[in-house]
Length: 159
Image (cartoon, rainbow, N blue to C red; front, side, top):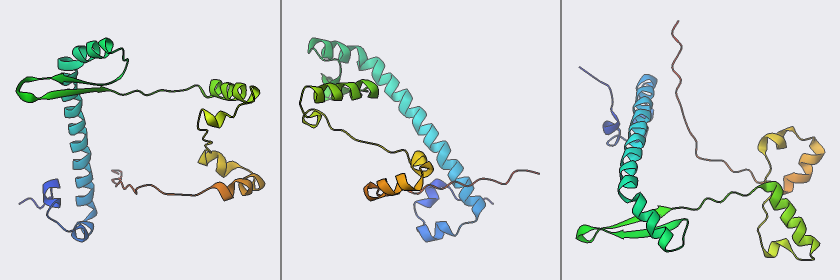
């Protein structure tokens, strides 16, 4: 007889009951979940590869005809289906060149804020290594938020 709880079993169980399962059961469920995520990722990659093969060239040609390098195009299909093909823009900017551009705008007597948003980021690792007087200077501007908690179970190493 197999008493192993499956991912499908979890859907019908209260969270409090799940939290009371033996740790080995929880570890097995986490393993199952990792395998399912990996399987779904492979399926997603495979299906999107097929869609790219089917629509990629036509979408590229449509974008080219519209004078677009990226963006969304629509391809009419049979039975009223429409393939929506999106190629998102993901611009990246060289930070050193941006700083130089900001200084050029300032040298012209203009305000760079009229053209760009400037966000200053502080590395948490660097913040932790700063001397106390520097840290105190930045503390009023700092708000610490936390993300979603994550949990893993590490199996004991075999002896």
